[in-house]
Length: 474
Image (cartoon, rainbow, N blue to C red; front, side, top):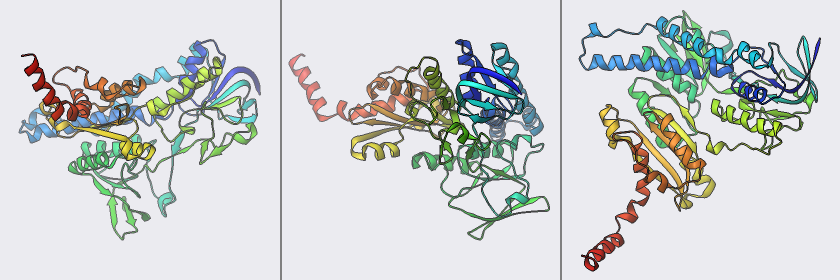
């Protein structure tokens, strides 16, 4: 067994681990990285990149169908073939993968070991062929799909977000178990590509969002043909004659051709032997303090293994925090309230800080205000032929911005304006006085913020003051 001494040993080559490795090695630290699977982790290989490429192809297919409905000659409209969609996904992944590759990180100076790693002591990590003695270690092993214990599931073929892109043919009817972000995104993609889609959810679809937004999304997806079965528990699953039969506890049978299990994620920590390093878990997450440090002061944990807020930008933010804490002993901590998240359906749903529901729970409904604006009155939205869209800006009574939720075209880009405002601790006034190009979607943010001041500006008192001004200074 090869004995290695290093400054930082990272387990996991996904978004969190690679961000940390890249920063640490370029700042002069000695870095060893263990990754037993594919470099790039879930985001590159099974999540963000392939799913967003699939959604982009699905949008193209959807727009072509709209052209057909607008009496464009069908002979002039080429239809997407699923094999071409798969090819495009592979091409996109191939373009991005070199950035996360073993070759790139080894050129940077990182020692990359493609083996399963586990703790063999408080300051030691070992694999089959290597033993690493570290000054600091960082766990960034991410998550994997959670497979619920449903009678019959283990006996039939099913897909997860890690295997769905291996499909060779388009499903005729895709049944999705789970109405979270992943399930919703893939549902819209496949319905637009030509599949029938049914979503079975034991609770409510997108239940962590304010009902106004989850209802708008369901309405949109229903209009595209997706069927929802909410508050529905599954009794058993069967497969006969190349068909999937889902029997619910409401005595309803849903029949499809393919099954996607999207019922949440579970941490990849089982094989790490955490107890040998004195590391504890809580509700399957690795237990850390506000500095992302475990009970073992020489070991940190970042990314999906420490939070249910599982987004690539959160993982990158974790890496930045730990980089400061290890290299400079700078007491840096994570603030998830300034990290936005987006669900990449069309239109997109993006959120930063507090939702209306969360703010009311935290501060009391009497102490917060929520100003709204509907995209139906946005001129750019109208020129582009869109109908859907809503903005919530949540603030304290004095106008201090606490959060924003945007459901509309390019919401993942628009939310950055609100992210900056919250990060800089600005008030609604700052957004209300911004000048956006005309026509643009950004104007919706300005009008939402301006509505906070409407009652004061157009009040009886203001009218009295204006009349007085002209009387005194004609």
